[in-house]
Length: 209
Image (tube, rainbow, N blue to C red; front, side):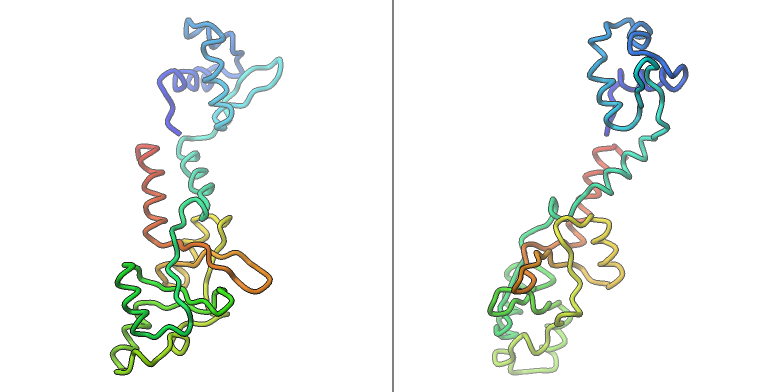
């Protein structure tokens, strides 16, 4: 959160002389109490100030860098996920390679006849198979894919930090975003290192870091 000039001045006054009433702050700034009421509300909701009835405002000790940290913690997968690229488990390796290049992605998510997640195909999987096999049009992807339960996934309500940690721990580039259904795991999105990097960069720009 970027504070404007008046909010910064209010913060400094409260730091030095808090607890202090809204009327006293307004008097210091030579403004009406009503004029600074929105600023006080913003600073209080953001956690920079605390207010107590009949006492006034006092500095909560929260630093601007903490607000950046709070922003990172609040970023959810569902707000930054992209469209998943899905193939059926009976598709040939050749068709999967074509699909990967056409969609310009590094990972394909494989689903079964119930449209539930059954596997994951990476560039490495397809490259390894294409080097060692000539009949790619006859080989179905379910033979070479990574299968459940060895698939790492996330949910829309997970934080980006949690998703990033999973990727780093497993040394993978993306995760399927799933919803648990009675028939299995439905793929509703994907979150990639690029998604996460873009999200954190947007936060850095917002705070002018």
